[in-house]
Length: 317
Image 1 (cartoon, rainbow, N blue to C red):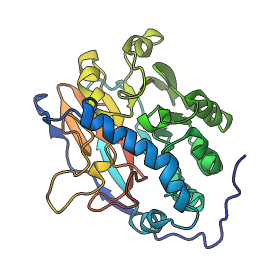
Image 2 (cartoon, rainbow, N blue to C red; image 1 turned 30 degrees about the vertical axis):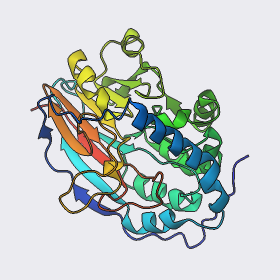
Image 3 (cartoon, rainbow, N blue to C red; image 1 turned 90 degrees about the vertical axis):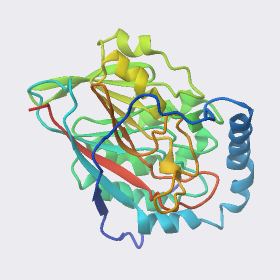
């Protein structure tokens, strides 16, 4: 059953906006000693995250929402103009809004998300990509926020979803996909679709989560060949996607580290290949990693404010 969303006191500060820094050229050799996808330390961390998300925070969440207070004041839009090699020639400029890691649950008040979504849609994106981790500990956490997401489907080319690791933490992931489909958001799970844009078209793909899902590149490629645009929750899919010749990959998962001290590294390190936030290039491919909107484990961010990313994508001139 969906929760009723209060829109009283619905004003938010004007959206903070910033330009993403130019893409960082990667060698493909950057690698952390500890693989965040494997090993007993990361396994223990994952189960602790699941237990806290599902059983601890719900006990206090009814009266304590510290993150929503911060989100209202610190959320921003990062903007970039991209010209990926291999982007379809002659395709009209495409405005894509990337929203990742919403993490519905006790940290997020639906009315705060409702107001942010309405502000973002005033930016008039052609298409919206919701890049995974809609929930924190259980798929049922999506129910109170589904109505908040409906405006995303007003984008002319629709709203699209790919699965994240938290989407598998509790409940039936298929239920989450069905609930999103009921409001007009289509999930691409190891799948692709042809998107018509004015007089041209491109292929959009979606790969399953790298950690908790079952990624299948053959499924992504089967219907329409190599996508020009790939939704991949985990940025560590980047190098595999580059080998396949995918020009542009959109990811989240890392939260930008969630806590970062001035000029310091990410504290929460979720990418084995140091793909923590922003733009990256390798070979002929570009990667966009959003810090995302929500929070996990701790109800705060520091030095890695929540964001959505607005891109204008055009062919190479």
